[in-house]
Image 1 (cartoon, helix red, strand yellow):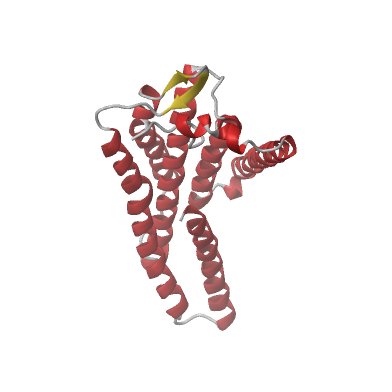
Image 2 (cartoon, rainbow, N blue to C red):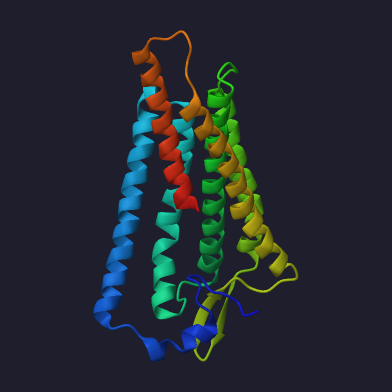
Length: 248
């Protein structure tokens, strides 16, 4: 199986780019669009971090997890988007071997952190709604879980810091993921750990939450209070279902 470079471009594909080279105006449009998305991502996620961390009343368990998502997205926007669009458009890698390893590594870490954080948010919502009498997650436990997501993600992505390398063919340099003994096993584990397993957990969690919320009636409360609580719960679940749809 041929090595894949950053941006999903193989050396063979890059060698054929001259046959399908985009006109300069289209290249400029792609670059401007991607850089605009990157800039908006940096600003938007930085604002989220500022709002939550800068205001005491916003420092809830769920918002801490959202800040973790924002930091993960920031790392992706700052370190990966520009390099990926360049490698995709021009089919070469002029940034050196260290940046080849670093970009691959940060991409993998960022994806894992985002996914694990979505799972943590889902499980927190699940406990809060399905078992409302159980104590809520404390701030210290939340921070420990966030630290765990980063630790596990960094360890899981270590092969992407070691094996990616640049190769040169016909005078053109590419950043590839490299070949090693367990390449296929690692790729399979990425599919399972970063996609299939989290998707299964989130699907089960939010299905149970949705059934509970839309069928629940709170006894002993006035209609206004009851409806307000139910609508608030439905709104939160709706937001995280949207996040889940983006993840899928």
